[in-house]
Amino acid sequence: MALKTFSILSILIFLCVSIEAIRFDNYTLYKVLPKSLEEIKILEDLQNSGAEYDFWDDPVPTAEYINILSKPELKNDLENFMGSYGIDFLVTVPNIQKLIDNEKKGKYTRNNDKSMKWDEYYDLEDIYAWLDDLAAKFSQVSIIEGGTSYEGRVIKGIKISHGPDRRAVFIESGIHSREWIAPATTNYIINELLYSDNEEFKAATRDFDWYIFPVTNPDGYVWTHLPEGDRFWRKSRRPFGDQFGVDLNRNWNTNWLEKSSNLNPASNNYAGPGPFSEIEARSLSAYIIDMADKIDLYISFHSSGQILLLPFGNTTDPLANYYDAMWIGRRAIGALAFKHGTQYTIGNIAEAIYFATGTSVDWVKERLNIPLAYCYELRDKGVFGHALPPDQIKPTGEETMDSVIELVHQAKRLGYMVPYVEKSSASVLSVSILMYLVVAAKLFL
Ligand SMILES: *[C@@H]1O[C@H](CO)[C@@H](O)[C@H](O)[C@H]1NC(C)=O
Ligand SMILES: *[C@@H]1O[C@H](CO)[C@@H](O)[C@H](O)[C@H]1NC(C)=O
Ligand SMILES: [Zn+2]
Image (cartoon, rainbow, N blue to C red; front, side):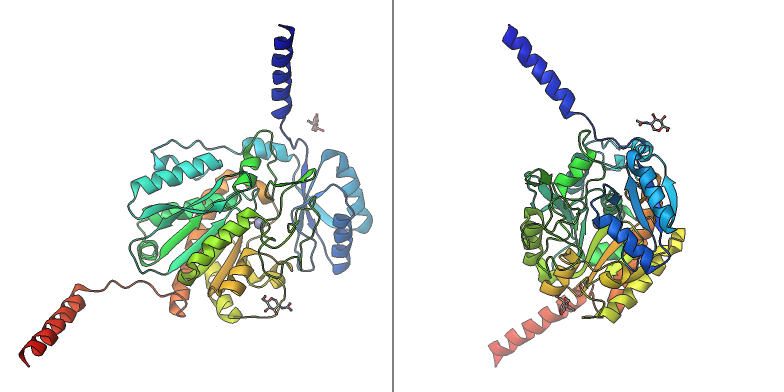
């Protein structure tokens, strides 16, 4: 009896402890606006000092602003620090827990793919259920598995295909789990590809195969949704001593560990113990290798900063087809601005944002020679960052869809993408008549 009471008690205590949420009450989001390289250096030193600030952007020479999340106990220190060096800053979100509380969590209803809403964020289970329902509903849609995660989850995606012999567009998103707008935007694009009446969207769906993975870091994504998890978790969830996770977009086998990555498991840019050490990046890359000769266009979705990036991240040199890729990309960000006026910048990773290596877009470009590879840093530009309010999902989805379609359009014009052309029945007929004639000629001569 006593034992029983004891074990029930310990279960209760365990439950209480395990559902204790990581909360962000009175955590403040700052937008820091450095005016000079000296100020950027000072911020870089602060980031490297081990102080417990969460830098959402790295203080790099090209940085227009840097979002820093501070816990309440450290806010005074941070403000005094910046004050003492005359560094300008704004408070964009005084209490970020309030934004988290207002993040409407969607609830998807099984067998009703229209119950997916575009002003709510969904958890992994709902997204996967929605993909399953789309596959059941549309003959052109099938479920694909791009790999597995450390905790044993499938990296689930869908393939949209209107028939054989099509070139492919590959979309990978959610590799950084706290960037919730990325999977939401990817889902929006899937929905448009399947349901839109827009003739250009329909043609893109018909003329190419689409391989789409909304959440390529499923463990991390689940962790950002769990009550006992962490809304601002970026990495995977594999344990390393008392630390967790690898930055899966530093783990690809291309110039691994050279830039903006390190071997410290406590860091948000931990590159892992070796290139492709992580099952998520390794298994997804194996999937991509198997179909690489089909892919004309590779897209990776991240947030934030409103930047369209292209390879490479190790140098500002204009390597490979840089000028063509820039030309196409410029038109894509023009199309993106059309509906809501959202302004993007563009450049290769190293010139537009920072030197960073071991990323998926560099890997597909370097190792697989995929003609066009882009990485979107979606909305916004320093106000809400990773806590982008859900009322921005729909406009972000709309403008990004316009931009992706423009990528396809311009890539076709430059000959980088060749749409499928239906073999007309007339030509099939004339070929068969010709064959008859040949056979007949052989018989009679
Ligand atoms: C947050 O700050 C407000 C105002 O300073 C204070 O009243 C409140 O107790 C704080 N909340 C927490 C959970 O610390
Ligand atoms: C950058 O990476 C590319 C692709 O791996 C390589 O061809 C190039 O030589 C590298 N450049 C520098 C400066 O490291
Ligand atoms: Zn990211």
